[in-house]
Image (cartoon, rainbow, N blue to C red; front, side, top):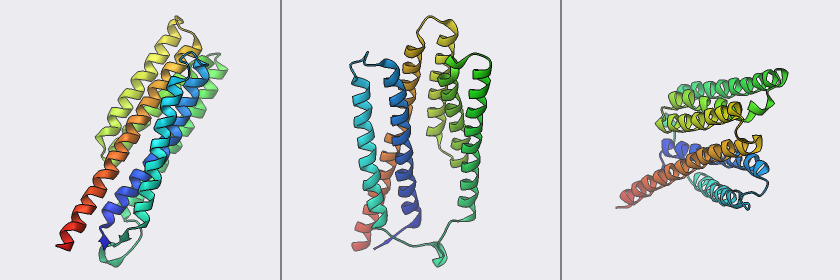
Length: 209
């Protein structure tokens, strides 16, 4: 059975997204739990661990399905299209600028004596990077994730400025808020992958008739 290349690539993208969301959910979960220090009886950490295991399971499931696909390329030519190469280039540029912005912010905050603002500012940079990605890949969901993460980050900056909450509590709030965003994104990738597999199964069933 031959598989449409766009569905294969879509499933590969869903698997790749899940690998990233597994990593970032673990990162934000560690940041929040390290700040909470057991105040929540490790409940949030356990929930996020279950989420990560769930993501990893679907990552390997999608990858296994991708390997089982016999890809066919337009005109019999393999490799990326010029449009895909262009998007890949801009994807790298966006992440490069994100990393550069984080390094600049670390230095500025440390040199001005405001290290407590780092995690909220870090989250703000992460939130902002979703907007150009949403434009690049034409995904509205990225804009929702960007808006949510930016709101969480700005709340963290505001609370830090107010000084009414401890630094650890603010970091925990920002970490859990960002983990919620990566969880939502991962679930979106799973649903997208399942949608692609349903379409492929429907096409295979139709071909057998």
